[in-house]
Image 1: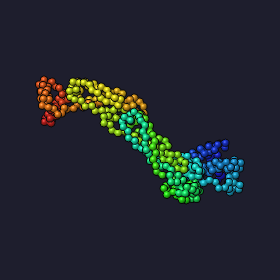
Image 2: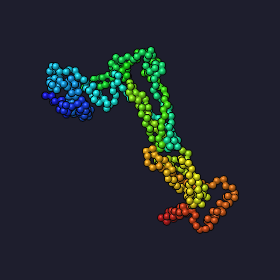
Image 3: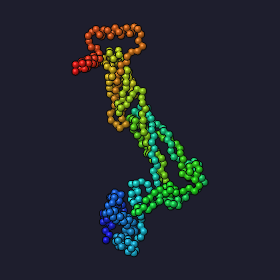
Image 4: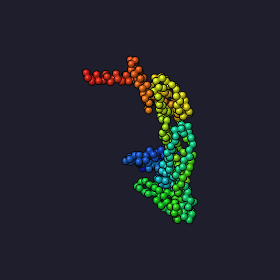
Length: 375
């Protein structure tokens, strides 16, 4: 069966650039990959055809020969063609390496460092106003014994003979060539003949570093601050990971936060609740006067506009909601108790409902028992 034109296989023009060829192969290889087309013989054949076309057209010499002589110019069976060629894993890695991570630098595999997490406790005041704190983190540093060389004698590491410094070895499994980390050098591409006793030849040791973290105003528990490049260092020149600072706001003795609003319990005596009055209440900005109207009942809410929190995500500043609770007087002397009894008797003799909630509740209880008796 005659082979199709390689440009036709990839769906590109004969003047296509190297980037166009790579882009076309990437799209078709992902479409016809056997892992995505389990048992589809037709897709497997198209995948092989796509791979063959890319192998020829991505090589300048092979492409020139193909453009001049067609398939005969690149077919070893026809003589004068280019033999050998890159294996599937070489081609797949060169095209998809930027997607699946990894890469090579200086002959060995490059790895990004691990991300770190730090739980930072803040007071409510610092969380609302913003602050800057210094945190001490465990990290990887150069081994002092070998100055980061990894060798006891500080001799330069040698190229790994198992992987020839690549850091990866390939194992053939049927049609695919599987690539894995070299067990001899653990992906570093180099080996130390006389390992340092302190670090075991890695050239790294555990240490600490102190960094300043700027906390923006308005953060709350559950918010996360990302510090790029402050995580674990990469391997073989790879980029460092990131540090994620998780905010935890401690409980406050006066305020409770819900979103951008603050809540506070304000105890008042029953005289102020009955006759009304004024009292000072705290806010995060200082003291303000709260006016209590006469006949205020326990549990009533008073909203103080703009005395809450401005969210780190923007928007309007929240409110401070004060919930009053009426306290029953304690440690009364005989005279005070007698005055209260006389006061209570004076209320009972007027025939006026001075406790509307209690009266309504008693009426409800009375009706409940009547319904039970005659229901």
